[in-house]
Amino acid sequence: MNASTIIIILLMLFPCLVSAGDLAKENETATARFFSNLLETNDPDIAELTMAMKMMPKGADIHIHYSGAIYAETYLDWVGDKGYCIYDRSDPKLKIEAYRIEMRPKNQLPWENQKFCLDKNGVIANNIFYRKLLEVWSDRDFHNYYHTEEAPDQQFFDTFSYFGQLSNQNLAAGLDKLKIRAKHENVQYLEIMLKKAPSFEYPDLAKALDELDPDADENIVFSALTPYADFMANDPLVTKGISDYIQTEEVAISGMDDDEFRIRLQSYASRGAPRANVFSSLYSAFSAAHASKKIVGVNIVGPENSYISIRDYKLHMLMFKYLKTLFPDVHLSLHAGELANGMVPPERLENHIRYAVEIAGANRIGHGVDIPNEVNALALLHLLKEKEIPVEINLTSNNFILGVSGNEHPIKLYQRYGVPFVISSDDPGVSRIDLTHEFVIFAANYKPSYADIKKTVFNSIRYSFLSSEEKLTELNKLQSRFLIYESEIAKIEKTVHKDMHTQVELD
Ligand SMILES: [Zn+2]
Image (cartoon, rainbow, N blue to C red):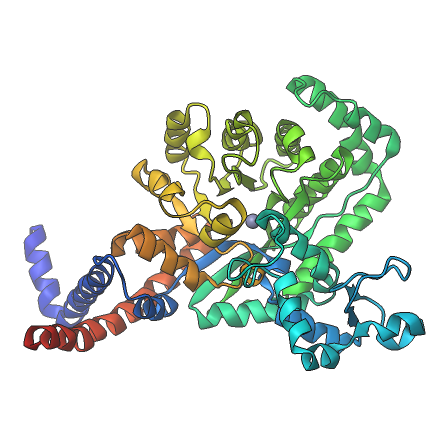
């Protein structure tokens, strides 16, 4: 029996399966037509695009910071729940600062402080203060009207100092909010940077790190890191600290997975800290990711243009390389190239992405905005493509913090050179966006085909740090979600849009 005979017999036996396959293909084509009609104009209907993007399965958000994902309104609710208050003015004598949360219950404060500290109801009753609070705790209204402005990147990073401590007290409640948001916008998996890994400082050993030339050779750096790592490996305080950290992380997400949702965590260090702090925090992060199935990767966060981040960049990459020798199974997603012309001297735009890949061994790159300024960017693009190292693109964040948007953003460069990428949200609470919004910008500004949009969504699961079996399960679920989605969009395409075309013809 030849192949065509087998196909004919199968067609006779299972006609419904074949027609279901045909229908799915038809729905996919209709969805592609819907998007090309919507996007082919210079002035796309953003409202309809938003509706379509909100409905669309978006796979995963694999670049998202927990404390930056929670909206200021939620933080204010938590202030109320805890009986805390927020200062309405600054007074150095009382050591108080406007818009700061007092982390002690209001009724336990000295009378002088109580007078200037508003509880949640006090904040809500004062609309001017309430609006200003939202502006200080996020990027809201930053560009809308004239006010005395911080630099945007300063505004963005400063917000975290207002709610960082409070966010750590409400991990489970905050994560629950993010799960609900994810489900509402058809996101099935979150890979979240939840809490910084603990650091352990030994002054004598720290001195050896502080004395290193930031451009020192690998061997010299490794020989300064080894005694530090050995000390950490044998210190019971460190073992306890890391296991407490793992426990906090695992407890925070326990019971959250269900048939439609999965959550995993990334551990991280802060790149603006002193060297011993960065290294020991990275050691803890690697150690936790190695030990826990729920912590699937390690990252490094914080402004990439701060004095220390710039000075120690290569040193940090060597720390990653060193720790990879101790924990080779740990996956890395590194913020790299979150820089723009003018923020730093041109030489500093020339190698961050390359070092993250070639020295640290990054599996994914966060942002990657300065790629066109890298030395030999062309070879780097080929390398990213060849090694299948995807870039996590955060359009709103890049626009606000770096001032890079539209044609200046390298997203099309990545696409043209075959470098895989995903769309992610970074800090949706501070930026006051959601993942849907990021897909709307992606589609409206860069006019990808529906096939490209779909590929970008699948990339978010394909390049996540889930295990191979988990990825397969999630990819199948994503496929099923798309079948439903495309049948819904096909209906719109055949009814609403058809009527719209007729209307235009009649007019
Ligand atoms: Zn980020």
